[in-house]
Length: 305
Image (cartoon, rainbow, N blue to C red; front, side, top):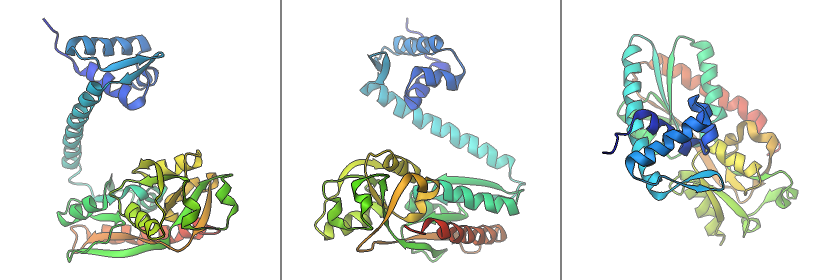
C-alpha cells in the first residue's frame, strides 16, 4: 500500500526545483545532502512518478516534475496569501502603506525610495508587491494598494497618475562589446545582435519592438526576462544587449556600457495613487519622497548615458 506523501518531501522537492541543486536546497533547508536525496527518492516512490532525470550527477526536472511543481507553487502561494492576511489582521492598529511596483522598478529604485520614506516614517508597515502595470491599476481602483509605480498609461478618474522620470531609452551593452565603441546606437546596429527583452506583454517591450520594426529591424531576441535587475545582470554577463529606461540600471551602472539610442524612444514611468486615500497623509509623504529619490538618482544615472 502506497504511503502518503508528507510536507517535508514536498518542501524538499520545491527547494530542489527553485535552487537548482540538491546541495543548495539542502543548505537552505538545513539538512544534509543525503537526507535531501532521500526525501526526493521517497517522494518519487510514494507518488509513483519520475520527477527528475539524473544527468551527470545532477537532477533535472521531468515534464511530470514541472507539472507537480506548478501545482505545489500554486498551493504555497495560497498559503502565503493566508499568512499575509494574518499579518494584516495583526497590524490593523499599525499605520500601513500598500505599494505596487512594476518589475522594471523593483530593484534599487523602490528600495531607495521606500528606505528614504521609512527614515522619515519609521513606524509605518510597508507592503511591496511587484506586478504588472495592469495589476497595479486594478489594485489601486479596488483600494488594495495605496501607491503604484507603473509604466503603462493610466486612465481612470479615481487615480492620480503623474509622469515621473520621462526619458528616452538607452542601449545597454556588456563592457567591451564592439558596439560600445559607438557614441550613439541606431536601429540598424542591432541587426543580428543577441537581444535581451522584457516580457512580450510588457509596455516597454511593445514600445521598443514597435520602434525597431518601424525601421525595418526585427530584434534577435535570445532571452526574455520580466525583472529589470535580472535583465541588466545578463547584459553585463555578455548574453546580449537591450534597450531600457535609464532608471532601471541602478547599481549595475559600473558593469555596463550605456549609450544613447537614436531615434529616441520616450518612456515615462507613472507615480499613481488613489484620490481621497484612507491614509492620505502617508501617501502624500511617500509620493513626495519618491519624487525626490527619482530626481536624485537621475543626476547620477543619466550623466554620460
